[in-house]
Structure formats: C-alpha cells, structure tokens
Image (cartoon, rainbow, N blue to C red; front, side, top):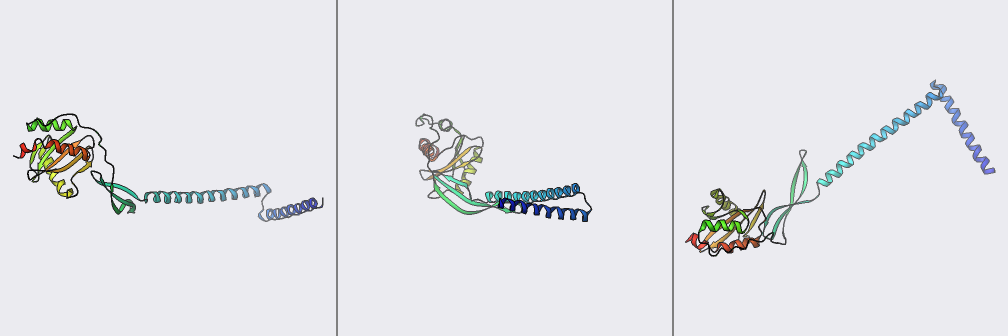
Length: 237
C-alpha cells in the first residue's frame, strides 16, 4: 500500500507540474489549450515528414550504391572459340563519363567439352567425280548453308556460295589472323554459325570456310576434311 501511495503521489506531482508549465506557456503565447495541442500536432507531423524525407534519401543512395556495386562485379565474355578451346576475357565494368565502360583484367584460356550437335546424313561421296555435284552434295550431307574452298592467295577453288569471291577473300583474311601451328580450326557466332580451317593437299594450302544453321564442331570439321579428300586431287591436279 505504501508503494502504491508513493507512485500515485509521484504521478500527481508530475501532472501538477506539467499543468503548471502548460498553463504558463499558454498565457505567455496567448494560446488556448486547443490551439496549443494543434501546434504540438503540427510540430510532430513536421518531424515525421522530415524523418521520412531523410530515410528516403538514404534509401535511394543505398539502392544506387548497390546497383553500382552489382555492375562493377567481375564479369566474363567469350571472345574466341576454337575446337575445345575457349578464350575468356574477364573484366570489371567502370563508369566513364556517365557511361558504363569496362577494363579487361585478365585473358583466360580454358578447355571445354566438345560434343557433336548433329550427325551428317549418310551419303557416300567417294564415287562423285563432278566438282559441282560434289560440293552440292557436301552441303546437303553436312546441312550447310554454303561451303567454299579457297587458295592461300584468295582464289576460289570450289564453292556453293552465292558470292564465292567474297567468301574466298574473307577466308584468307581470317586465316591470316587466327591460324598458327597449334590452332587449325575456328568457329564464329552470329546470325549463323561460321567455321574455318586449313587443309594441305599435295603441297598446296587450302582454306575451307562455311556457314551453317547449326554449330559445326571440330569433329564434324574432321569428317568434312575426310570427304574433301575424295575431290581435292581432281581440283588441284
């Protein structure tokens, strides 16, 4: 009972103290109680609005920082593929004049498993002696859009392309850029799959370039090389 009395007595004194200063403040400001309460509410609303604005600004900054950090993560991009070898460029995007640029940090070569995406048609080319019929049958057997054989000087040897001279010139240009002792097959991706490889026949270097709707891996290229062996002696004799 004594504790309860003490608590009630303390609360009564605090209420009396608050009422005293509230009345004094009202008299000094010349406000009624209702006006004073309204002013307090307005102040509290203003404080809430200010805090909400500060929180929103901080939230936007945090989102921008998170988005920028996400953009600046290390990324990878395949820049070349040859048979079972891929060349990967690892880079971090950076802001350059308010645009996203990138700085390549490392070029990595890695081996990837190679699987044939399709099987060629079962067609025997060994008995075909006519070159035009041979190249037409070759493109049909391997499901190619076109196939071109060019000399190292860029001359067309045999082609099923609509513009064989352009294909031959392209073949020589690409061959000079990418082929070396350890690299004898390359493929490129775009609206179609393009492949290129060199072959030797009786001391002559021949560049083979083709387009396909399906990806041509090195194992398919080896089959194409084998079949071309049936017609090459006739072409370069």
